[in-house]
Image 1 (cartoon, protein in one colour):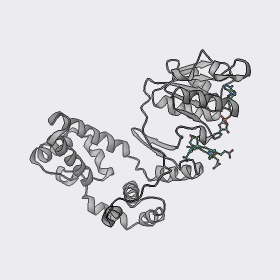
Image 2 (image 1 turned 60 degrees about the horizontal axis):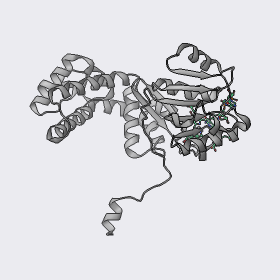
Image 3 (image 1 turned 90 degrees about the horizontal axis):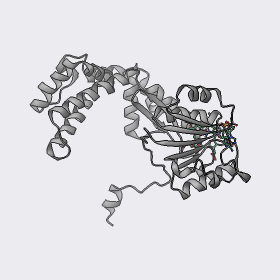
Length: 297
Ligand SMILES: C[C@@]1(CC(=O)O)c2cc3[nH]c(cc4nc(cc5[nH]c(cc(n2)[C@H]1CCC(=O)O)[C@@](C)(CC(=O)O)[C@@H]5CCC(=O)O)C(CC(=O)O)=C4CCC(=O)O)c(CCC(=O)O)c3CC(=O)O
Ligand SMILES: NC(=O)C1=CN([C@@H]2O[C@H](COP(=O)(O)OP(=O)(O)OC[C@H]3O[C@@H](n4cnc5c(N)ncnc54)[C@H](O)[C@@H]3O)[C@@H](O)[C@H]2O)C=CC1
């Protein structure tokens, strides 16, 4: 290998997890346990649209009991211990075999039960998470933040969950309040662009993507909410897309210019904050967070 090649392709840094957004809508999840940790898992599962089978002897943690009562279409509760046969042999829990599920989670203070569930799930090739036992997790939960359609997760690959929480809080603070408006506006623009220029793949698709990227780069997150207005989108598409041009907000009559805003924000304490985060993030991420912070101010 040439020297040039090895410097162009940095060494692989192993030890990471693969971060994904798992689409659980309508999928079946087995949740074993009915305490505080199970309650947290349940909240995320319901938001993702999963159907959750909870197995735990009552009484359930209060929020779980509430969801069981109010989400009958999404939760089935079995008021008993899992693997309730002699000796807690989970492979003998014929009524609720782990292989019937798309995901299995345990949140019980029972090491032997958790290990048995993990082994049964792996034998059935069903992904499993045993709260607090990293070797028995095919995937970890992370510290999360959600703002409408926007979700972010921070993981330390098991090394320091509390650090994940601290960084998540930094990220959450940096997300501008109006990010939902930005996503809604850009989402509507993308949808209308696809109506004008439909299809998948090929030159048109490349041009469509280039135009979307250029347009997003020309607007701040704070300004993008203006794209919710049909008239703004019409002008962007008629005067921009149709004429092979990328238009900033001022060109369609929205707000002050981007550069003026960024220059103004750089004047404030935000720059100090961004520098402080430099040790934790890549350059690109710092730039993004700094931008988010400026827009929020
Ligand atoms: C591997 C992982 C497996 C998994 O459970 O998925 C795991 C494992 C362990 N957690 C332990 C302890 C703590 N866990 C938390 C908090 C959270 N733990 C979460 C995830 C994960 N925890 C996965 C890796 C995440 C990553 O990649 O970074 C979060 C982020 C998400 C969630 O669980 O929903 C959630 C924050 C939720 C939120 O606030 O949003 C706190 C802090 C607190 O409670 O404030 C402490 C005390 C401080 C400390 O110990 O560091 C212990 C030691 C137990 C002991 O010592 O006995 C182990 C076992 C071990 O490390 O061996
Ligand atoms: N990853 C994380 O963020 C954290 C993980 N944990 C770990 O998660 C586990 C659960 O924690 P908590 O919810 O606080 O405990 P908890 O004691 O509040 O709840 C345990 C639940 O499991 C149920 N249970 C016990 N045996 C069962 C069986 N055979 N079948 C079905 N359900 C059974 C109990 O009825 C209870 O509802 C513990 O092992 C704890 O160490 C704890 C704190 C944070």
